[in-house]
Image (cartoon, rainbow, N blue to C red; front, side, top):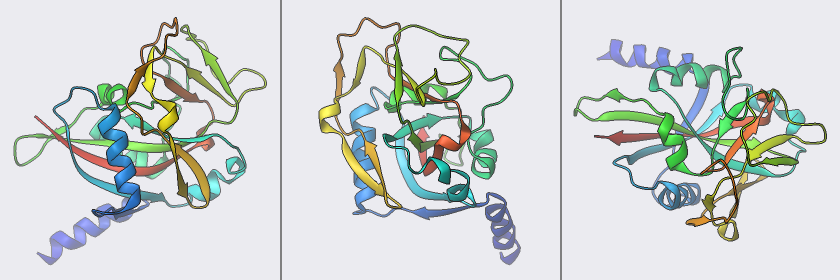
Length: 225
C-alpha cells in the first residue's frame, strides 16, 4: 500500500504541476459547468472532475503577455496519451504542426469542436476516460478570417492572434469575466447561435502562434461510452 502511494507521488511530481480539485459550489466550477452545458452539443461524454492547474514556472514564462488585453478561456482536446507531456511542457507548436489556420496552437470556444480531437483510454468500468483542457489565451488584437489559410505561421502584422470565425458560436452577449490571478479572462456562457457569416468554418477557431500566449488553467476528466 505504501509503495503504491509512493509511486503515485513520484508520478504526480513528474507532472510539474499543482492540481487542485474544484468542489461543488465553487464559482469557477459553476462557470465551467455552464460553459460545457451551453457548448457541448449532442454527446455521450459526462464530466467527472475539474482541477485548477498551476504549471510550475508557467507564470514567469508567460509574464510578458500579462499586459495584453482580450483574454479568453478556451477549449483544447487531445489524446490522453500526451496529457502528462502537455502538463510538463505546455501546449507546443511542433515543426510538423499545421491545419486550416496554419501552424499554431488551436483552441475553441465550443466544447463540441475540441471534443472532436480527443482520444481516451479504457477505465476499469469499461468506459473511456478522456482529458480536456481549458486554456487562457492572450488574444490581443484579433485578425478575423473566413477562409482557410494553411500557410500561417504567425499572426499578420499589427495583430496578435487569428480567429477563424464560424457560422455558429456561443452568444457573446452572455459572456462573463473570470478573475484568474488578477487577470480578467472572458468565459463564454451563452447558447449556440447562428452568426449569419458567410464562412468556410462552422465553429470559431482561435489561433496563437507564440507558445507564451497561453496558460493551462483547468484540467477536466470526462467519461464516455
